[in-house]
Length: 358
Image 1 (cartoon, rainbow, N blue to C red):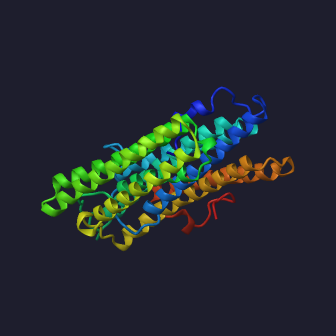
Image 2 (cartoon, rainbow, N blue to C red):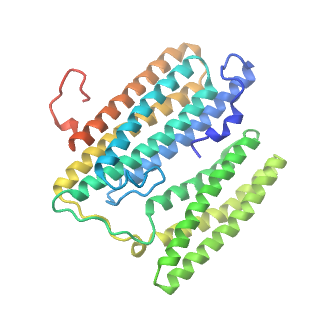
Image 3 (cartoon, helix red, strand yellow):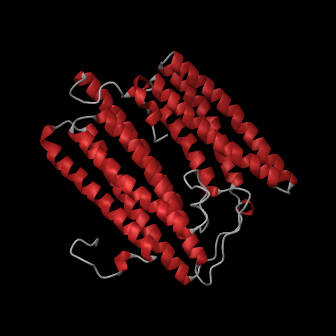
């Protein structure tokens, strides 16, 4: 949901904050705050799942092509290409903000978030491949379900339900509700596909039936909630929103039960056994990726602060913070690229020049 490029109808038609009047400027700022919250949550979730976890498994994601997922060299090249795209986007965000184009800033931030997620996924997969290829390591054994995919899908559902619960009714406009419905459907589809595949592959009769029943329970709750969302779109009011909150509860319970069952150890396969040499390479790559994510989260938080505060006396300080965050993103990208090329952490090496990252 963090990538709301499809919701550009809420922001197009008036890029400059000074060209559309105070009300329009305020609306763009509120949308930017919303985008910052969604993007920050998504980047932190992916970092928690892939960079801070000790679960050594390959990453299965739509951002990883078949070719790039098969070898370390191809995964490394994919990551390095994405670092270059990230540098361009951070520059775009600063330029758009300097021109007061808050709508465009929000769109670029959504693109940046998706790129960071893809970069983290590629980095984590490259780190796994490097670690599994090291002498003394043993590769992971696939299970019936993929914990990362399930966790991402659950997060989309939770985020959508959370937005319905907390956002002011005045801001739950048709374009946002459309994007929310799409995000909800995306998460539900991911959970359904994973469980159907697990049911078809399982040899245990109880497990097969429980996967199917879990999906049926979740689907029924989702149908009731989506009907309430359509009513809220047609007749926005607190009563309609209260129904969304009411019917969102059973859906969240069904999703949590489904994910809890699907991620029991017997369905996950076995994580890789990584040697000390493999662990060193993996740690170097994951550390570089974490540097990128941390800097992007700081940049996102800075954008949120700028959107919330209109005090002109603080603008220079915010701009400097934004500039420093963008520099940190660039440094993180360089650190990650070097770790991938050298299969070691540049932080453990003597600095090459005075501009080395400390």
